Length: 342
Ligand SMILES: [Mn+2]
Image (cartoon, rainbow, N blue to C red; front, side):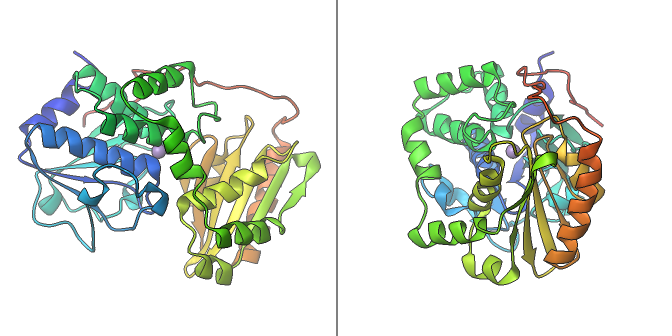
């Protein structure tokens, strides 16, 4: 039996399929949804690509982006729901209701995913959901059109910080090369995603970054975005990611946090460039994510949240030795990670 037999069978035997993703979608999520949509299209399936939240505007260039129904709810009933790139049931962009949405199938790569679907295809060592979908399409010999290549390349590139994280393995680079051969224009994609900032956003980002603080001996840095800036700025996920990544780009800083105040509390986004697993911090505060990138929302204002989270992180980081440049896994496709059928 091949790795994705069960997944493909489930899709083939379904009548009406809903494809959704995680709240505040990023490039990997939207590209995965669209790629799955193109497979369903070719299988002549009745399907809907649905999302509750708007996607980052830098993804406007995505082929078939208009196929995503962005509204309050999907239309009608389904016998199969595929949620992509979604770490937990509470991060699904639409509350799961089996009567309306049918069987729940999860395709994901988040470290903290506990397999909340009836069928789970979770590969925790892979850097992006798009890389999993590449493997799936490869296995079923679904051809990589230039459109699919563009989508999958972008999803892989955005989730690996343009191939800079350790999750971008040699195998990931081989996949990227294959996708370029199939028509992904890497230079165009780079321009669209990373060279597309508005002038006022660059000025705002520089203002936000001027509040960066660091504790050099702990290799820890953080930045705060108050409620007013957070509401006025209308930055998207990709742009926020850029800000916290700037903090990790400081020489000697291995762990970074961005605090962003919203109505319900404070969003914390963690990044690690070391063996320090930031998903553990996120989990402590009710969130989750990856080894090197994770997040949570704390129900306090920004100053109180920062105080509590930073003090906890100081304790935790002291237990780790961040003096070296320790490398971890990133050895490509680990087939028997978690592929459960409940
Ligand atoms: Mn992802």
